[in-house]
Image (tube, rainbow, N blue to C red; front, top):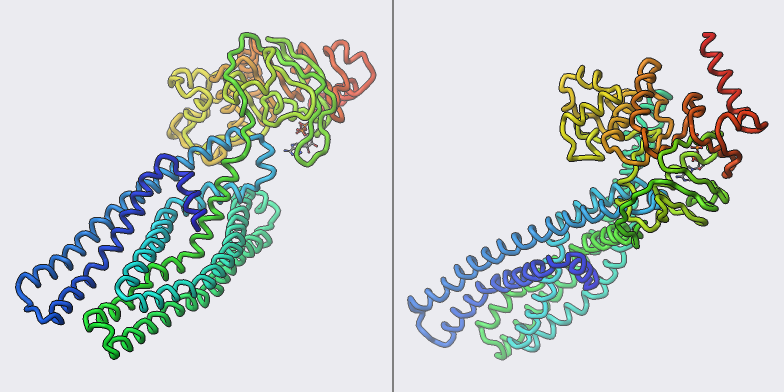
Length: 580
Ligand SMILES: Nc1ncnc2c1ncn2[C@@H]1O[C@H](COP(=O)(O)OP(=O)(O)OP(=O)(O)O)[C@@H](O)[C@H]1O
């Protein structure tokens, strides 16, 4: 338990002072809760000593009771204030730092950690930390501190009753430890099941169009239902295990409180305990174990907090891909692969001893069969993954020398799967260049042939796009992503079948726009269009993880091999299309 408190304090950095302050105030709040008992003791003691109950006595009693109430309220307020501000700031900071970390981890990280797990951490886990962490820690620390102070008070009040009190505490330890152990297993299991339910929901929502088109709604609903049922079962399991445990834990204290009362009675009958002390002990026995009981009720919450922190730290400790990177400003933008070998996490070799160079300002077309590694090459230039062997340099610097930001600021990418954010069209276009003016956005949109369809929308550039660009057609999304790349105006452009979803009429305009975009830029294009391939300064033919052929169209077309076949097939398809 102390380990968990230490973890939160360590994670909270300079906010830990505020958290300590809230613990201290929480402790004082529970101590001031004892003032009414002190008042009762005071009156009874006066009566027993044969002293008259005067107005002054009542004054003291009222002061103790009202003072106790007022002080309790003040400290309760301070606890909430300190806790909530520390909790909100702590979690806000964690959210930013997790977001930042995810931005800079190798993409393989997303292979090792499921979307459900990451989403659960970023949403429900952080919400849990925000809403409960401080409250749980406060109850636990003030429970422990109150217990220590109570033990001292009861022992000095009457050592025999004190021993019964301590006995109660010691007897509760085995039950508490068992609860902690059970809580650890169950909360981990519960959180994994919750993550699975989130993953199932995400998959269902993201794949809804495929599910509908294959008429698989019922099957997928039943999968999601299974995930939710498991979730409900695990919640029920936690309750059914913890209800009897909590009851046994409380029972230990109830029995001890009864023994305390019984012993106090015996001592009073034997004349060894005054009436005033007996009354205070009887009164106190009802509440003396309360902080410890509350601590017991928090066991599952504490354990959930522990595994929540595990998951947050797992992301925070993920190695940044650019850990030793520097901010490098480039003055040349050539790219070179030198004996590069690469495999994704599953270990299948994708690139094997690949070498080539792309001079600054030239256009390189990458062609090859599906799955041969074309997209992988562009991802490696942007260092989304690290290679296992060889080196990749940009402007003469190994990509490993850069910070992600300083490497990626030199590149504009238009990928096959365009992702647009749930934001206005204007902000989506400005994504790589947030300082751009509206005029610059419009200019880029015009060049990328999307100005007309944007202005035809009721809110024009202020139209909010659905998540992932779901409210736009494939071609519209692609044109917006090209406008985005144009606005960024980076010296290196990576295009992955950028015109695949554009209709023929717009494709002509778009090609002109792309020509303007790539002027004097280092361009790497995964192209299927014959004109792009033919005009390239260099063509890399990728096959089976190797560069099978390299050269210009005029030379490659003469050589027997993959490129010639590839070209002939493309030609045939084009002719076939024309014949239609
Ligand atoms: N994230 C990944 N994890 C594991 N394997 C991957 C991953 N991405 C791609 N691959 C595999 O790497 C190989 C090369 O994929 P890549 O996308 O580079 O091919 P490509 O030549 O661009 O194909 P296409 O023309 O069909 O887009 C494929 O076998 C693919 O299954």
